[in-house]
Length: 406
Ligand code: PMP
Image (cartoon, rainbow, N blue to C red; front, top):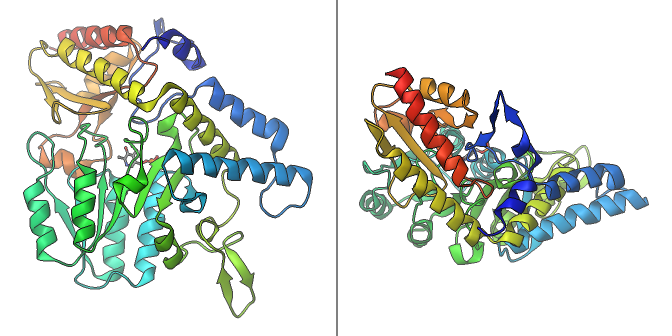
């Protein structure tokens, strides 16, 4: 990437030290750092616009409402959504999936004996809400297994679709644990042809891939702002408009109503029907700034840059005696590995002493770890601001730490 120095200088946190070392931040799949453009959008909101939205007649209330709704428009355009009304602001991916699963459970669309399909690669937040839906409705949860290389077993997927009664498929686009990129376009098409509603967990895709919800053909898609250079506490649930219109609200309160009496309440239209209470106004505005930030650089360029670094890291680590990588060779975003005889936590702790921040553990994917008979991995995950010196730093930190631990 040509302008990497100026990109890095937009992230003030990269200048801080961890002990005597510079910060080598490779935990981007957990959360990304925030560029000045995003920090300034948050600050500008509180310095110049802060007011509650939608209800006020005064100037600030209108200005804040305009900025919030403009942010919705920015996100809609970014996802190629048909209209801004398809964008529901949530607090993150987890909230979006819970909203979708709870609303579907209330809708009466899922009944006893129906099947909800997820995959072996899912994050807990794309497992537990569906288990809860199954408990409420009597539906059955089926899990598409994965092969040893961390890719999904497509023949089992098609077999289960053919067996019928699959009402919902909820799968991740990119695995946060192994970096596997699922063929979500083909799987969505097949599941929809079989009559299922499809939710895509794009938490790990949104920072690396340009999303076109129309081209994808799914019904629902979720992601978190904080993995896309925006603050925590803001996320998006996109839904097909006709579906959102037909689904019942999940949470009740202000904003989501049209008229309330003690006897009866009528509901607002989407997206407001699903946004009860005061939303994260500043978060939505900062998320729009983050979307502009990635689009100014280009997600294709960001992805190409990260992939180069990840491949370089893999080849720099490959000579470590007993190292084992997880996920397929064409993984994206995250590089997961273990070194024989060394606990990932011990390795991560020693790497941290050299300023290298990686994630260790089960990555909120306990069933996936159980499938591989491991308790966790070490995961290095990449973002736009990483550079070749970060690759050298991780290679050096792993080599030295392994030597100390053996
Ligand atoms: N799904 C995936 C694939 C993720 O990587 C994450 C975050 N690690 C989540 C869901 C949950 O996201 P959040 O904690 O932001 O709600």
